[in-house]
Image (cartoon, rainbow, N blue to C red; front, side):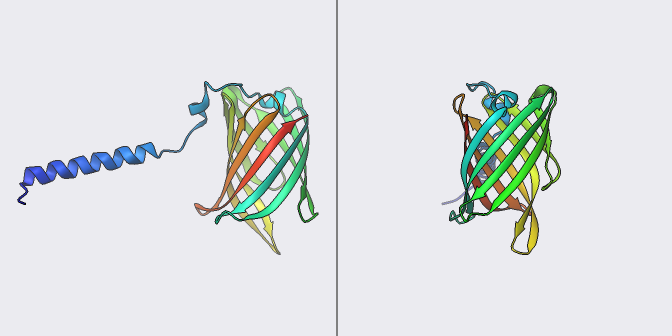
Length: 183
């Protein structure tokens, strides 16, 4: 079959446009994508009082390597919030993380905790809260800094699902899945 140069160019252009369109369809979601979702999440209301959570960590192959329960005591004073998390792992070990949150304009939040490197940056829209931060994780005798892409989805006034992707140097090392239950 003979192809003219103009036909090859047209085919090449169609292929390029198709590739760009395909890649655009794979773009990551943003909190703005959920702006009209209900019920609307208010971090101040949801994370105020006692919240319990149950979760697991899966390695990049999907194997569950840690299970845990969390009891959170949360309180707000104006734009400042404290989330005191107490973890109990399946092996009986425990951990505590105390977040200090700050509400900013336009649904933005910042957060700090002793094992968070720098400051977490978050955005709330509709029924979603998404934030990014670097978490210092102990692994055996060493510690590693992993990047967290953390998404929370409010399902109803009591239940919220959380899914976080952990990565190092841009490579996913695992995922955390949690169910929060407001008491």
